[in-house]
Amino acid sequence: MPLWRSTTLRMLNFVSSKNSHNCQRGRFVTTYAREFTRMKRFALELVNTDYQTTQRFILGLDKRICRTVEMIVPYTYASALRVAKAMEGVDES
Image 1 (cartoon, rainbow, N blue to C red):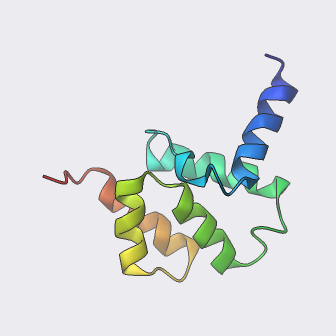
Image 2 (cartoon, rainbow, N blue to C red):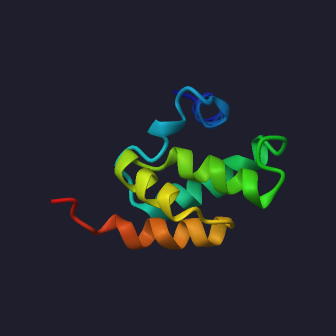
């Protein structure tokens, strides 16, 4: 698959709200955050405030991590990222 097509598909997945819960896809939070930061420049109207950036980032986390981060109600992207990283290694059992 050409690089431009792969990038376009990832960008569309990022913008799509239907697929937002599948963005992390088992990757480390740090890897997802790096990709999120890279892709958000293609959809500035969706993430033009820190609140919108935070909400979009949280929706893209794996469901277990997402639920925990949502309960804490972070007001900034940095705090959401910090909580997500902390929850990454926690076992649910």
